[in-house]
Length: 385
Ligand code: PLP
Image (cartoon, rainbow, N blue to C red; front, side):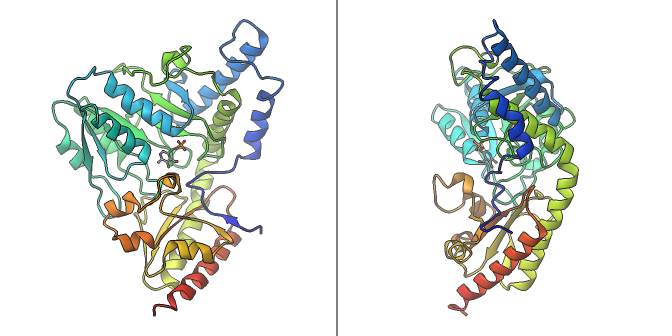
């Protein structure tokens, strides 16, 4: 077993060797610009992009023409939220979201509020669930869109998105979901679940960083989005910029591999997840779980070790690569808005640690992590008790 043991898979994942292998030819020999269709190089690149688009679409049961490639899930979310809002041309519109979204959603909505868009932020319950009834009650005559994430990046709670999406469709309101953490880990079907838009990316599913996708439903209704990056009219004019062909090829392959392995990985990771949760909760006093026990991502663990500051804890377990709160928003450090929204005190928030399990995590690594954490928590607490 190699240390440090990587247990931060909710933050990012290594590229799977099978995926890297698929990408490599597109850096050198097959380096064409997918928009240069007048010669073999361009045509080869375009064909690879279209093949990947189909692989990405297949993962979520979409059509290829409903996938727009972007540079990240953050960019997809910006395009969905700002792109829809701008299509209303300054009219007084209302959007519904919630307090535990990723900053990509929250900051985009704050930006739109600056332009007069009214936003309602729903409160989650103590497990992190958004109640579909609250969504229903918040819809007004001028509500144009609801954005609720599929699964939370910090506490792993999986939202009742099919119910929420059904309510939106009954009221003719668009439904967008940030599925960055969920795509490739739990089955998603945009047709059966009735999504209008969905954002996700490759680097959470063993593909490369720097590539994302926005699914936009193609009919009933035909959704109008205003592009956020203007230029050469790539991606049907919705996202200009020369396509990152190797990364897109990797994204496609990552989706194909996830479709193939999802069921098996779900089972394996759930066992490891529950092993670490049950051991830590049973063997360490004054410890509790953040998020729901059952409706939770198979790869997410988030635990409060009372009287054990998470920064100190991490410095005691240097053999483990784990994180405090949300590594995704560590560009803006501070207390976790997710933990405070579910009712955790500042003190509990400071004592919370996130552990992310993935494709390469072994039982041996999990047992090692359990032992290390028990030893470190007891050592730190010996100063208090
Ligand atoms: N949404 C969620 C739920 C995330 O976990 C992340 C992770 O960073 C993002 C959005 C942003 O994704 P990206 O890194 O592709 O911009």
